[in-house]
Every structure is written in structure tokens, then in C-alpha cells.
Amino acid sequence: MGYKVVVCGATGNVGREMLNILAERQFPVDEITVLASRRSLGTEVSFGDKTLKTKDLDTFDFNGWDMAFFAIGGEATKKYAPIAAKAGCVVIDNSSLYRYDPEVPLVVPEVNPEAVDGFAKKNIIANPNCSTAQMVVALKPLHDRARIKRVVVSTYQSVSGSGKDAMDELWDQTKGMFVPGQEKEPNVYPKQIAFNVIPHIDVFMEDGSTKEEWKMVAETKKIVDPAIKVTATCVRVPVFVGHSESVNIEFEEFLDEDEAREILRTAPGLLVVDKREDGGYVTPVECVGDFATFISRIRQDSTIENGLNLWCVSDNLRKGAALNAVQIAETLVERVLSKRG
Image 1 (cartoon, helix red, strand yellow):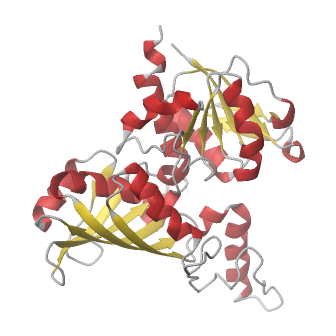
Image 2 (cartoon, rainbow, N blue to C red):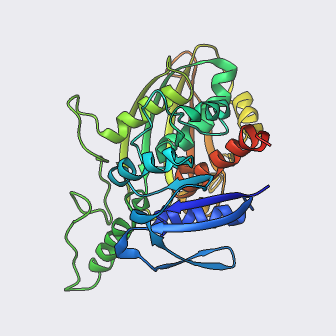
């Protein structure tokens, strides 16, 4: 059985990646259509060996379509997602709009696939933040074994998380460092991103944290366990694609690093590359285009009673966005849609 699928925001980085992954994973598509804003109307995008022309999101009729992937930002999602959901089309949303709604499941299929079952309350399923998605895939199997009390995470997030304009800004600023007269002032970011790091992602909140840091706290609690304490520092780095995270975990029970390594090796969605030698770890450049979340630098933290450190790397356009959305659709098909007969 195949499904009628809509991709909204098909001309953006995440939308294009969704189309690539739907084709790569041979998702059961009977019919597919791609939508964009009027300024991108008619733009061609690829789906496997097919070329599709975008249609107008504003006038599209979602009746008769099974599911829609939304990669269009919060404001547009606020307008169009309820329209699609009301028409009986299940919305899988990549924005932050519905993530904290108690009636909308927030799903990472390797972690909480059963949460998909609650989609019918609003006919919407939320995709988590890119930095949260890769971290919780690593946390869940360890939490099942030794119960996590507290997580301290520092992120090193690529510019693709801010979209194409941010990637262009990094490229232009880098060229401008070497070509006189081509210097590029910051536009997307508040400070220069080339050859720099910026400890500021999203807006600042009253307590001094940023919205990105708050997202990691709230989403980890919703996806894994509300009892876990999380503190985050989120940093933008001059990398085009691939988010990295340094994660410090405090457990209720002692967990030996060797046992942790074996648990992570057998956990879904993870690949462990952890050799204590030069180059025996994974960096963002190596993870681009891969489905897996990579774990390296697993080691005991001797400064606390039950502590562990690890390094976590993933392609943020894949696991952090498009791949997780497609996996949600696969889980929805497996757990719900295929059983409707």
C-alpha cells in the first residue's frame, strides 16, 4: 500500500533533503506533490529520478492526501498546518510551533515511537530541534540502563541550521578574508561567523539562556523523561553541515565506560567510532550525508560519582530534521496507517 504525500517548503534545504530521504529509503509513495510560496512557484526539485515542479501552498487543497511534511517555519505553519490537519492530512512539522503542545506528540522514533499513537488529537506530529534529536538518541539507551539524573551539554552547531542565507554568509565572509574588497559584514548573525564561534542561537530569554538552550531542556524532558535535569550552552560554529555536542551525563547508578560503549554500539540509529588514537573519532565533515548519529570519546568523568562524557555528531539536515521526519512517517505507517485496512 502506498500513500499520497505532500512536502511543504520543498525548495529549502530541509525540504529538498526530505525528498532525497523519502526516495533513498523507498518510502511507499503512490503520489507526491511539492509546495512552496508564490515567489518559488514553478521551481523544480528532484525526487529520485523524477523532477517535480512546485505548486502554490496558499491555494493547495489537502483533502485526499495522507500526510504532509512541513518545512516552512513557524509563522507559515501556524496558518497552513491546521488547514491540512482539518482536511484529514497528517502533518509532520519541522518547526518549533507544536513541540511543546501537550496534545501534539514530539517524536524521535528510536526513543519514543509509541508517542506517535497520540497524533489523532490534532492530526499533527512535531519533529524536535536538531540539536535535541541527535542527543536523545544517545541518551535513551543509557537512561534505560542506569537512569540519568543530569545532563550538561555544549553544542557546536553548523550554519546550515540557520538556512541557506547563513551558509552563503559563511562562504562569503571566508572568501572576504583573503580577497581585498570582498569583505562581508554580518547579516544573518550578530557577529562574524567565519573563523569565529558565536555563543548565541535564537533569542535571549529573561534568565540569560537562549531559546535554543531552552528547547534542548524542554524537549529532552518531553521525549525521554521529565525528571532529567538538563543545562545547555549552544554555540554556532563555522561549519557548513553537521552538529557536534560535548555531553556530560550524571547517572543514578554507576555505569562503566566499556558497558556504555557496548550499549551504544547496539542501540538503534547510532554508530560508535571510539579509538583512543589520532583520528579515532568522528567530526562533522565525516558525518555529512549519513543517516547515523556518531558517538566518540566515551570516557568516565571522575569528578562526580556516576559520570560519563561523550562526543556526539550528526548531519543536522538529516537526523536533525529531514531524516527524523521521514522516520516519524515510517513509524506512523507501521503503527497506525497500515492497520486501518
